[in-house]
Length: 307
Image (cartoon, rainbow, N blue to C red; front, side, top):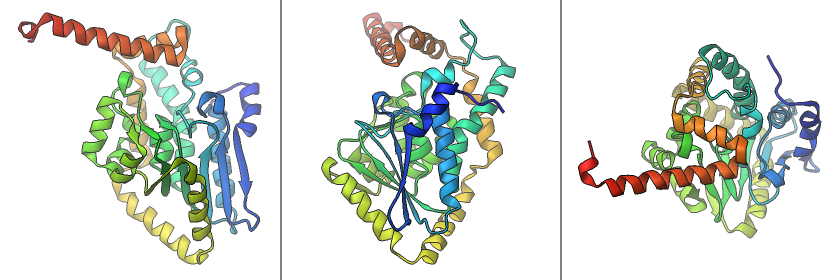
C-alpha cells in the first residue's frame, strides 16, 4: 500500500491534528489545526486521525471523543491538490488499471479514517462551525454519533458543481441520515445547508449561536462522560448493530469508490486542469462562469432550440 505525502507533510501532521484529554481522562478532544486552509485534510492528517481514534478505542477510561476545528471553519474537506496531484503531468483521465490502483490506495487513506470513526467504541461528538464541505461533510459529519452545529455553519457537498452529488461512496450515509429527497436537493444543486437546516433534517441534533457552541459541546460531552460507563458502551454497541443493515460493507464501498475515480465527464476533467492553473478558488470561479455562460446561451437560443 502506497503512503501518499512527503516527509514534510508527514512531519507537519502532528501539529495539524491536535490531541488532548480532560483531567479525569474521560473526554478526548481531536482538533484539526490547519486554519490557513480551512483545515483541509492531507493524507498524513487522515492517517493521524485514524491512529488517534485507535488509541482512544484502546483506552478503557475514555468515554467521549470531541472532534473540532480551529479557525473560521471546521473543515473544507480533503486537500484536493495533494490527492489529484498523483497523476502524470497532462493526464486528464484515469485508465481502468490506474483507477483500480488509485482507488485501492485512497480507499485506505480516505475510507480508513472514516471507518475508524464509524467503528469507534467511544461516543463521538462533532463540534461543527463555519464550512463543513465535501469529505468533512460525508466522511465525518455523517459518521459521528452526535453533531452540534453553529447557526452560521454551511454544510454540504460543494463538489456537486463539477462531480455531481456527493460521492457514491458516501451516498448511503447521506440518504440514511437526511432522507433521499433532501440528499438530492443539496446534492444536485451543490448548495450548502445552514446550521438550522442541518438540525431540522437530522444531520445535527442541536443548533446553537456561534458564541455558545463550544460551551454547549463541552457541557454535553461532560454529561455523557459522567454517566455510567457500561450503559454508554451498551447503547453505543446497539446503535452500531442497528446501522449494520444499511449495506455499508467493505466490498460495496470499494466498488463505489472505484467507479467514482473512473471519471469521464469533460467538465470534470476541465475542473482539475483549472485547479492546477489557478488553484481551487480559481477553478470554482471558472466553473461558475462556465455554467452562467451555458445558461445564458440556452436562454438566447430560445425554446425552439430545445430538442
